[in-house]
Image (cartoon, rainbow, N blue to C red; front, side, top):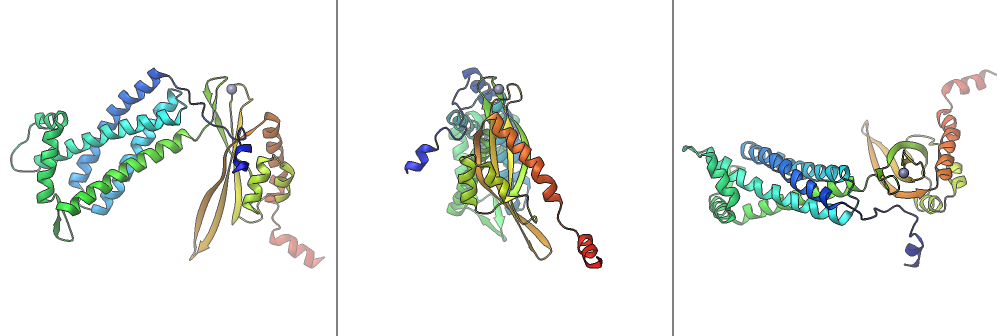
Length: 310
Ligand SMILES: [Zn+2]
């Protein structure tokens, strides 16, 4: 893989720097917010009878925690993927644990006998108590699917899938949000997006990527503005607003297929965080101006009619 080595320095990467106080802030404040989310989540799954909807809500719960962690880390200018993953894991684990305590407590409160708030405190601070309660619930089953109670091994599998869904969604969301914007180390600020600066015909994707890495703007220009809206590549620029010396570019291919009156959009990333010099970024913006009128100048029916009558 000699080719991959020559790509070093072509792409922006987070520096890995972070402040310890910023990281601690994210752990503490993030955990408090995540526990509030866990409380709501546990109550929803106790009272929502639709199992499939609960699965979606589990994914949503994970995504909210992951997004919240990344947003907090970015606010504290953390630009280390390892620190971000670690903190997201800690916060997700706190929320995941607390959701079980609330779930058991909420389930008990549905019964005949009143269960005081201290019950929730006990379940939260004594893991052994929570574990025994869960094992007991597992034997009986907590809910039914197609009329029969789900319990035992089947319920453990459901719980394991729920765990996997929450952690996967949380980490994936946190990582993609952390990775969205470049950070200017000179100004200590996040870059600002300038979306859909330029749109061109896709052509050959591998070639487009290679030429973009070689900063071959002529090739991109020759692709031309999108003829129709069915297969094009969108370019987004990111820049530091303060110094104007950090520029990166993202490319995303968009394929639109129409089937049965509905149009479906398929997006795939061509490249991410390609570093540009300020002059290259300006050239791309100029190219966009140049290609824009051509793209809008799709021959309407009137030109045909004129040609026919002449
Ligand atoms: Zn800057």
